[in-house]
Length: 136
Image: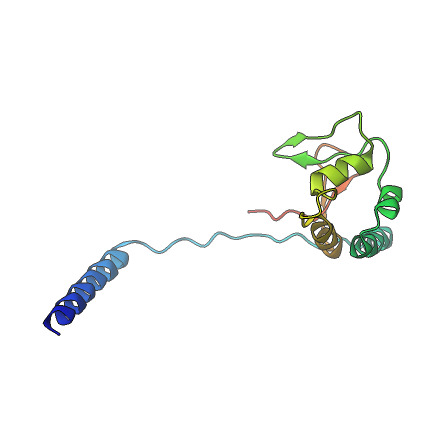
């Protein structure tokens, strides 16, 4: 019983020291984040609905009909990762892992389609990147 009391006393002392150290640290400054705004465009909403339906059904042929054959881009870490010898659908399928049965690619595609936000692409005039990005 005496050993348990000593252990409890040491634990209480360590917790008190940690609490005192935390009081000496200034609080973190809040970082304001601006969330992306939903896009208000009927054509974009219709496309999102089509993509969502296709993703729920995991319909490869229907998805291939929605993706442009040439000119498709997929930005990652500030670079375009498109293989110009592949179709737009093949690039999208590879990027999301749609060919891997263990992948969550179809669920990811559905979540992208369900998000009404988008941001203008800085590198592709007239194109929207979805989902939209937040700003600091």
